[in-house]
Image 1 (tube, rainbow over the protein chains, first blue to last red):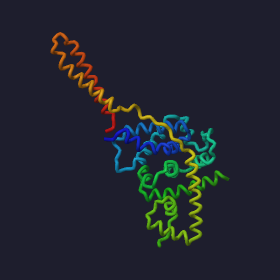
Image 2 (image 1 turned 30 degrees about the horizontal axis):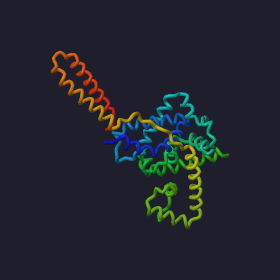
Image 3 (image 1 turned 90 degrees about the vertical axis):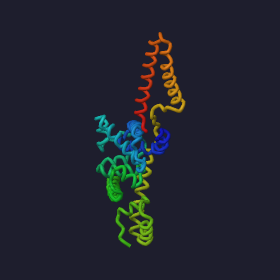
Image 4 (image 1 turned 60 degrees about the vertical axis):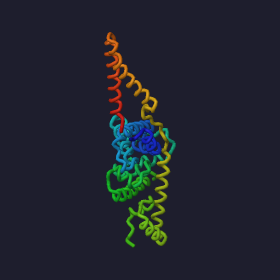
Length: 160
Length: 123
């Protein structure tokens, strides 16, 4: 029997990171909260099929990623906002570091962007990233290294 | 000692290497200033990105819909059992056939709603 309390206990510690991760994709505070809410509901609906041998965090973040994609697809206006690197809608944010990181991430390839999001925003381990992306752990190591190099290059361009 | 791959330095920073390999890299870092400088640059970048990512942290409130607690479950069970008993008793009063049919329908609707509701819940 998998209870609501059990699901809540697993979910609650992830919510802060989940919101940061969703925000890194959607670049919009309200939409990221909507995505987290939708993922919480969808995760609960599917909790019965969750394989206990897998990481709950990896399983749930894959659901959250899909919810973010659904939100992007549902709104053509949002699609422009989320995918065009030139457009940053965090106008209310006063955090330069966050804006700079989000801007540089938007200019990376999807593979590099996603693995960096999982590492820095979702705070996932290599095992969890491997499960979320369905790739071997060795690939996580090499891809993350290349993604870091690419991000450092973009950040130095942003700074200059 | 086998050469250190650049990706291994990243993994060392993340604490993701096997303990034996991590010790080898630690020893090399202590004796190789160029590698040490490379590692320090990586470490500082990582700390800056980690800090930028943390600045986006905020915990949203999520709702999963109403929860049926044990009292609600008990009340619903009691209603269903009570309804079934009433259906068994009413036909004995002959002329109350109409009431018996109504009770049958109510109990049937309750049972159906319960079955549908249970099917929608994760196991």
